[in-house]
Length: 520
Image (cartoon, rainbow, N blue to C red; front, side, top):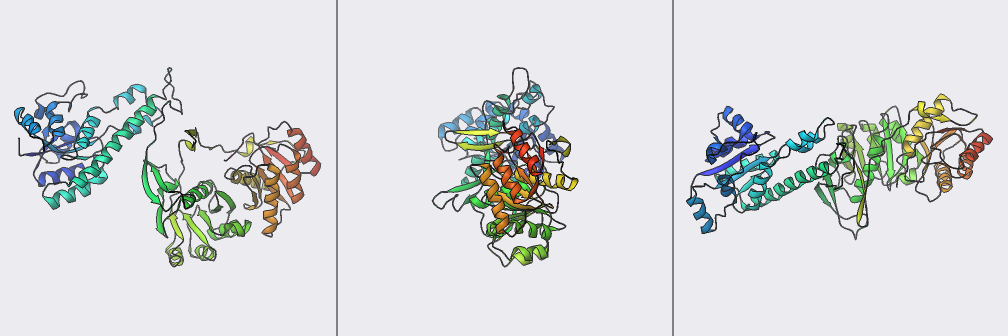
């Protein structure tokens, strides 16, 4: 059996591959490669042998058959600890391949394009690559398989430290990553193909939904101490999503911290800057805009100081020193912002229990919303529907003023992030009372007014958003008695005329959106 050490390199993503190849040559490996990878290495003055020369069989079928050959797969799959395997390699003059570097055609990136055709998608299904990856991963006891350019530095360091060896522990870790890589790749193909209808159109809900996430961290416990939990990230989190956070300080995030932080971040992203959202138990308890972060925070906090205790605070603009000074006067679990000034970092530093998260503000979100139920999964497109002033339908004798319309749209935006049934009082770009998650809308209306009263806020001249229609006039009567002068709601109830008549009776302006924002 040959004593020459061989590495096979064939990559679609060529990031860092020249540096890895140089390290392999430095420690005595002979490199086999194909196509564009071989050309890149040769152009970089790295000695490389084409796989076709190694196998004695030319590439064929437009490159579809390159590495599918016993001289490649025998060298990868042979067990070095079995005499009969070693004898078979020697008999057929097949040198063992000790290291395989492969990543696959960019299938997911290709099919993500709106103009991608089925034929183009099929051509981007890699065959030889996954076969080599799985073969090397199966034989990790003797072969190292590297699929991720992020692993190159660690592999290079180990090769240099050992003179060309990769430890079995490292090989096992690389093998696990390799099998996950091919599983995700095949899952993406399955999800894409089972979403293709006979007429060629794509259904957003494939017949077989394959999901892949990476474990970011294990958590101390779940919603309650007797539950275990972990946080998993999308393989490619959407821009601006919470999963892209960088934790600057504070103790480990908990399950509830992450869930509430996501609720706060998704809401504040939709606001004009500077904006602030305070969330407690998945519901906004204070939302406001301001001339700066401090002003936004003060108005948001004033909505419900009691509920804000121990809450999650999110900003869509930089947090500076004065804003941080105001925040640390209260007990807070998490503060999220696109950035924190050095002065703010100094203010927070002694508060070691306060978790600071930096998240870039960007449009985009999850392609699908998922909710686990017993034995199944509910899947829907995300609620991204916004309503412009021109879409609103004024249904009462009294029309809202321009200022009231601005407040109505602000209230409507907030109501979208409040658990149903949701009633939100607002005025002057801030919330004044929030009623959330009640079994009846009239109770949500009563709670929202009680919250405002407890915070010492007046609702006289306020506006109200309801996430769904008023089924009876009683909810409308409650908000009117509290002082509201304009209401925004979807409409669509069989009693719409009764509710509109009640608004006219009380001199309230009412506009209908035709859009509902249930949130469960």
